[in-house]
Picture 1 (cartoon, rainbow, N blue to C red):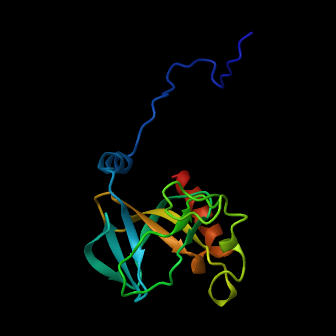
Picture 2 (picture 1 turned 120 degrees about the vertical axis):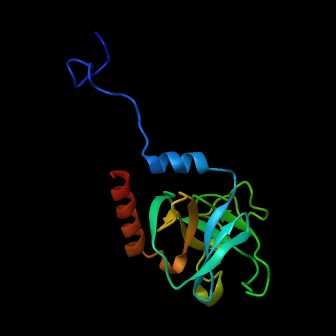
Picture 3 (picture 1 turned 60 degrees about the horizontal axis):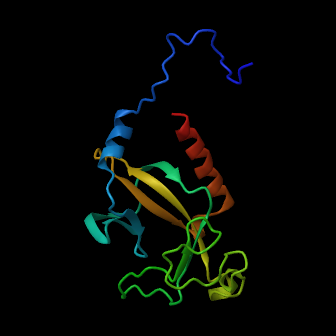
Length: 178
């Protein structure tokens, strides 16, 4: 008895070839090891950053984009020093892409896991909040950018409400079926 299951009585005429759209092919061939992200600034602008350098002019106010992916879990990020807009940007002291444990590249891990970390306790941060902040990492295609460049965008904790995250999850699920 065979363990194979087939929904077709005959496999002839059924293509098993996986095809990509022209946009997916362009994205796949344009992928490099560079870091591309959209950076939100406190003055209400967004910058396109490639390998830490600004590319093009800042975007003022808002921008339209297509969410093409996002991490399943909410990420975490911790800086020991308070933000100073006059200082050069630095890597966080500790971060977790999946919100469970510090990443291997974190220079100053605060604990072996996020759940038990003292920075994850209410009151450890400013104004009674947690010192370790949440963020949602998404991948974006910018409207009108025909290059197919995908950018990372970190949605800060202040916008990571349950309602916003549910909308992004539904949006991602919708995009998966397109």
